[in-house]
Amino acid sequence: MRFIYFLLAAFFLLLNGCMTQPPIKTVSEVNLQKFMGPWYVIGHIPTFIEKNAFNAIESYVLNEDGTISTTFTFNEGSLNGTPKIYKPKGFVIKNSGNAEWGMQFIWPIKAQYKIVYLDDAYQNTIIARDDRDYVWIMSREKKIEQKTLEQLVEKIKIDGYDVNKIRWIEHSN
Image 1 (tube, helix red, strand yellow):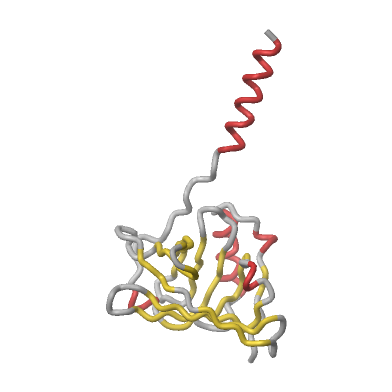
Image 2: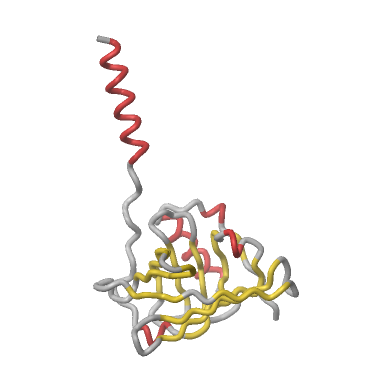
């Protein structure tokens, strides 16, 4: 009988370990024309390619076919470090209100890109993933007011991220 209880306990522990967090909710609607243009990356839980990024800027251009040409630039290792440029292509997911994209760095793989916060003026945004492995706080300006930044970090925390992993990005003046 103890063996059965042990198996049941092990099963439920295993099942609990397999459960994932619920999907992160996106904003309801994104006006792509207003979203296009340059965004300064203020803070992030970085991917391996941007873990030492400075002066990080992500710029978007809406193409006639509905795809999004993206240019991600930064300096590697310091404010004056080697310039790096990546040009992934964004694909808006149907019925997402333009708030979820597939971001393709290498064909055929598309990484999840969810706009989970966007202020009414299209000045500050948070890009996240359901896996909660990467996140980006971006702004039209190089700096965000402290109160606003604290609110954005709190949003990220509520969405299930470990905010202690956020790396803050320096930008040249």
